[in-house]
Length: 604
Image (cartoon, rainbow, N blue to C red; front, side, top):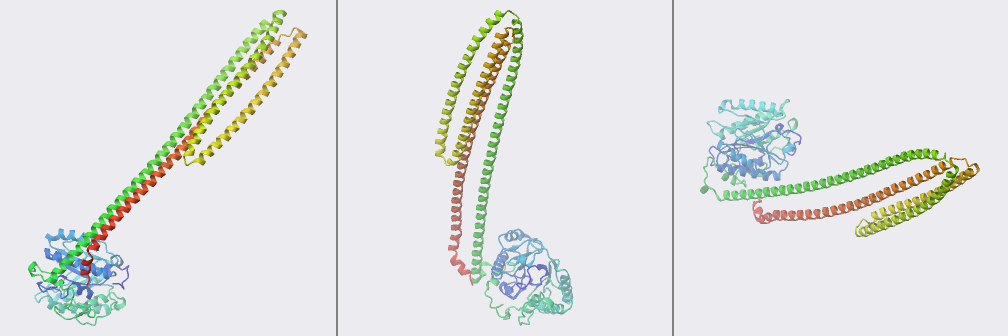
């Protein structure tokens, strides 16, 4: 089959086969084949028909499968077809036996030759539905109609073989005996196929032809039918025999093996019809073959166990990989949840800050409205009082001068106290910040993320310096503005006093002075509130930065711990896998070491 293309369907190949392939022993009654299994394979037979009815014939099935498997190991481009017909009582045992680890094709779809090279293709039988379905044609017992019926069956198979599997039995059943009928029938099959091959309208295939006592000539005629334009793909054997006779010296394929000198002498001893061969009647060669078969079965069981252990190990490894993936996904989910919680906290803090700012603005507006109302009331009272005499005005002026001096002194004292408090607070905050920075530096030196933390600290120091410079500049600007306002107010007061002294009727001096004083108070209050708000905001920003730096450091620590855990887990997994691989290799090596002399006995 090595010269046939791989993409050709198996049904489109002409295949020689044997009917009742295991009936080759002289003890079989009746006897349908002259050659044992080895000679049948060497002669080119590729389809085998087995009938299983007893425990002894189930052993024969085992022997056939082992022999076929060893043949396919040597001839990897070949394929063999097997049709097993068990009795009703042996169907379950045969089905279980064929479901074991054999190189079998059990599908019902017709494969290409490339798909089944090196395999045994199962063909369905009336009692066993494993493998390919096949359309079977048989001959009746009437000798006068056998030739015409054979021609019709082969012609029918040639018409359908490209679409479905066709099996044509040319069994030699009748009163004259299988061998006598086969001598005539096999010659008729050979002549008919040669006529078909030489015809201009020759068919492409004839399917499977299963025969009794097939000889080299008819087998190679069927094989050569696969060649194009009537030319064979296998050289003729030079034999003119269409029938293989029992105990004949006919050479098969140029003398490679003969029916008499076949090395598989156990073929005869393994086959017994209806339990005719008992344990006491088996020869020594049959016992040796039985032992070889048992050894091969033990080796196959051992190989099956190794495959199951490999599958279990692969399953455990897959479960470990799945557990590792679930852990990584959990860690990612937890990380995302932590980030969401952090974002939620930042949003809440922002909302609180905005709420505080709005409340402060509202309080500032209420204070300004109150001050305006008080200012209007004071103006009305002042207008009423200004209508009094000049003496009261002079007295009030003197009192106002004295009060103005006291107010200025008080303001200066309050300003000095505020500056001292502010300086004290800045010192305490600086000390706290320096202490926190020292603690953070000490903690960060112990960790491996030193560069990141130092970078963050440098940025914070730079931002702090910028803030301090801004505050100093703003403070200088405020002091300059305050001094400018004081000068302007003094000039205004002196001008008003001069006007009052010159005119003595100016009643608006007091109103102007009070208005200026109220404006100064208002400006002073607004400055203090602004400073407080800026100070609170700076403290909140500083706290927020501290939190972010701590969170970053904690996040880096968590990542380092996670990386360390993953490394340790990987090392453990690799160690476990190495141990498993070592144990598995030892299990695979020990049976081979123990079976070295046994395998040497199996070689021919």
